[in-house]
Length: 150
Image 1 (tube, rainbow, N blue to C red):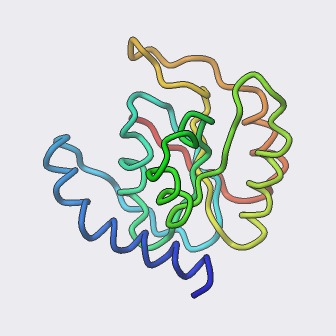
Image 2 (image 1 turned 90 degrees about the vertical axis):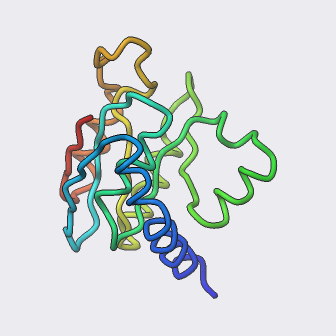
Image 3 (image 1 turned 135 degrees about the vertical axis):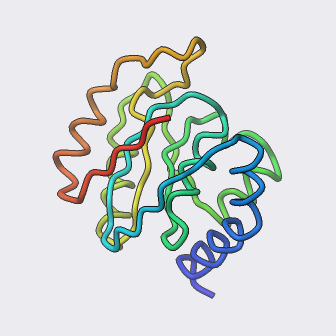
């Protein structure tokens, strides 16, 4: 099975298994986005649950998330995440060139990518400044921009 089919199947299964439980647990109502073309989803970052909660709005379309490097040091969890969801790594404090290139490859393949514009989750609920490379990615990607706010 090719990688994209595996990701699509994992996305649908995770959605079916989790969406009702998570909406109930977090008292959340998510608006479904049925946009059919690749898009850049830009969201604020409030909790560690944000990628999962953003995913609730995209039931039919796998979304690839830009994630910080700590997510890639969790042993078997990292292997499972990479196999079924393939997060895009972002090293803090370094150039984001390889991250941007991976995002652009996903857009070219017809995939959607979600990036948390602040780069870090907030510790007090106040939205932080947007990382300038996020704006550059939005301009250079030439895909639709979908904003998401918690």
